[in-house]
Every structure is written in structure tokens, then in C-alpha cells.
Amino acid sequence: MNLLRIRPKMTDDPIEETQQTPAEAPAEIPAPQPEASRAPVAVASAPGHSITLRDLKVFYGNHMAVKGVDIDFAPNKITAIIGPSGCGKSTLVRSINRMHEEIPGGRVEGEILLDDVQIYGDDVDVVAVRRAIGMVFQRPNPFPTMSIFDNVAAGPRLTGTARGRNLNNLVHEALRGAGLWAEVKGRLDKPAMGLSGGQQQRLCIARALAVKPEVLLMDEPCSALDPVATLRIEELLTDLKERVTIVLVTHNMQQAARVSDVTAFMLDGELVEVNETEKIFTNPDDERTEQYVAGKFG
Ligand SMILES: Nc1ncnc2c1ncn2[C@@H]1O[C@H](COP(=O)(O)OP(=O)(O)OP(=O)(O)O)[C@@H](O)[C@H]1O
Ligand SMILES: [Mg+2]
Image (cartoon, protein in one colour):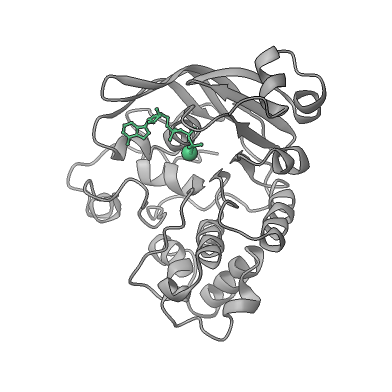
């Protein structure tokens, strides 16, 4: 199955033009994750897909923030990425769904593959990449002028995957999945900006779920959430990994230990160690990993 729906680039393709992320869009605000009209959406219950990074280098102008990382994110697993502030976690995950290139001066070298397809290939549709590889950002970023319902419906509307009652059901299911339904069911037509920060973050998670991505990148998705909402999201991630490959950036060591199968430790743009989560937290190979998980720095 060709997840990225590679097709020849057509310079005056109207679908392409209307669905591209505007170049001037703020880097942390992705366009609704649309899909061009072509191939069918991957089946929700299909096994997950792998993401492979090979010698990945990510730059801001001349500054190399990710310095040659090799890692496989295995299907149907949750991989946690941990490491001190500024070590390149967000930069790395943003490059996986091609959001990094929206930043002026943003540049990527090396390879990223979704299964065996080059995400940065010349003939790959960047819109399809962002549909297949959903993202939840560190700071909640609902579409500010839209209602709660419309925020979640934005992706499916653009992809044309659901309408009418089906769309309603999809939106309700995504809101339930993100643990927000009970709090918003009576006010779906109200502005998303009227929600609290934690509610906005769960709305963004619902928005990401509504397009049924194959891979989900979550950049500290729980940093604005209380312990109950955090637990709800952790349960959701555990359910989701049955069909979605998950990359979870977290500063919360307990969270990494609770929910992830594999943990990757980054330091100063490099990948120090990647191992089974239990090993990382009990008997890591690298002394720096041991010091970090023991709270001795960072
Ligand atoms: N837009 C940008 N322009 C220039 N440099 C940037 C930009 N965003 C991040 N950087 C730099 O890239 C490096 C990695 O930043 P990044 O945000 O990926 O770190 P992080 O590990 O996610 O940190 P945190 O845990 O605080 O979120 C840092 O040195 C940072 O200053
Ligand atoms: Mg970050």
C-alpha cells in the first residue's frame, strides 16, 4: 500500500495549491491535516507502520540541532524520546512529518522512511505525509476562529472522508478518545478558544485522531494536563498502539516508564541510547543515560 500516495507533481494542480500549508503559517500551527482526494485511507485496524531515520541531520540555518540520528520506530510500539531541554527532541519529531521545513532556514539531511517510502522523496505529497503522520504539539494550538466541533471536523472535511451523520460520529468518537467528550458535549458549537489550556490540548489530540493517522507524533502532549487527564491520554495511547505507531516526547520519566515500550535518550542533538524501556530505567548501557534517568542532570 502506498501510504504517501505518491504521484507526479503537477504545478497547476488546484487541489495541491489549496491544501498546502501556507508558507507564512506559524511553524507551530499546522494546516488541518488534509489528504488529497486520491487513494483510500489506510484501514484503521491495519498493523502499524515503521518509521526509520538514517543519519538524520536537522538544521536551523547553519545550526545543526539534530546531529546524525539513526533509529527505527517500530510498528505497534510506543517509543518515548527523553532528554534535557534543548537537546533536539521537538526538532527531531517535527522533521518526521515535514513540519520543520516550514521554519525559515529549516533544512534536513539524511533519510526518513515510512515503511520503505522516502518521506522527503521528490515525488511525495507533503500533504499526504502530514495526514499519515499526525502530530500533537507541545503547546495547544486549536484553530483560533473555529468552534470545538469544527476544529475536530477540519481534517475529515478537507479529506472528504466523512460528511453529515458520519462526520458527527467521527468527531464525537475523536472527542471521546481524547477524553474530552463529557466536558464539551453540550457546547460543541462554542469557540475552541473558550476551553482551558488542558482542554485545548485534548481538543488538539482529538483533531489529530479524527484523520486516523498511521503514525502519531506527540510532543509532550500532557505537559498542560492534570493527572486525571494525563492518565486518560496514557490509556488512549496504549489502545492506539494496536494500529498506530507512536513517538512520544516527554519530560516525565514516570510517563515514559509507564507507557512506552522503547525509550530513546537524546543529548545535545545526538541519540545516546535506544533500548527497551525497562532496560533504560533499570540497567542502561550508557553512563549518561543512567545519570539522566536518575535525575542527576537535565
Ligand atoms: N525556530 C528555531 N530557530 C533556531 N533554533 C531553534 C529553533 N527551534 C529550536 N532551536 C534550537 O534547536 C535546538 C533544539 O531545540 P528543540 O526545541 O528541538 O529542543 P527540545 O529537546 O524539544 O527542548 P524542550 O525539552 O525544551 O522542548 C536548541 O538549541 C534550540 O535553541
Ligand atoms: Mg521540545
